[in-house]
Image (cartoon, rainbow, N blue to C red; front, side):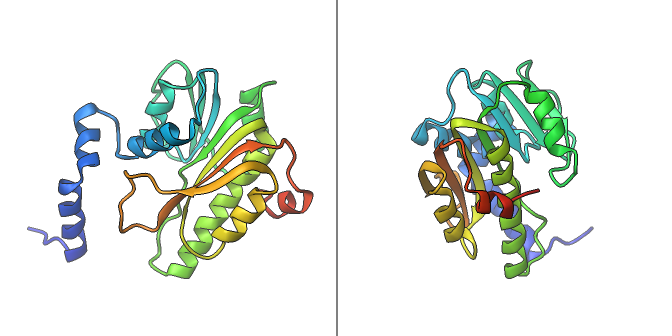
Length: 217
């Protein structure tokens, strides 16, 4: 019989005690991430009934299931496979680093731009804090670049990040482009985690040229 490591044992025990994990399982919601988005949406009123949402890092679908019942149209993007969740959800297996990513997204969006860009993307964790933080902020910049090109005027951007190097600079840059920019930590995020969400609301419709160049894919 294979012995579990201490860290894996602690993780399993934490999962058993987590009320959001239990609720997600009971309600067939895919993951506890559902509650993070629900709490962000209830606090900031991010999703209108006619919203067109671009979701980056969508697998395994915890956010997508919530979006399917609250938005008019969802384009859920991940490099990992995902099931078709609802008729108003388009699942795209795309790599955000690929050269044709923008062209493919634009073709699916058509003439109407997104009213909300969401990113729950996270890198594979190496355990080296500085490297993991840099990789996380790289994904944040990619999501921001997607918003610069595909978000309509007045639209919103939400990105997952971890407290550390680069967060303050991201906030300062977005405040030149959006009406309101804050950091938020939903109750469903574990208290001991550095995970936070950057929430930028009311896109001006025009990114600072220097900032946009820095965040190009």
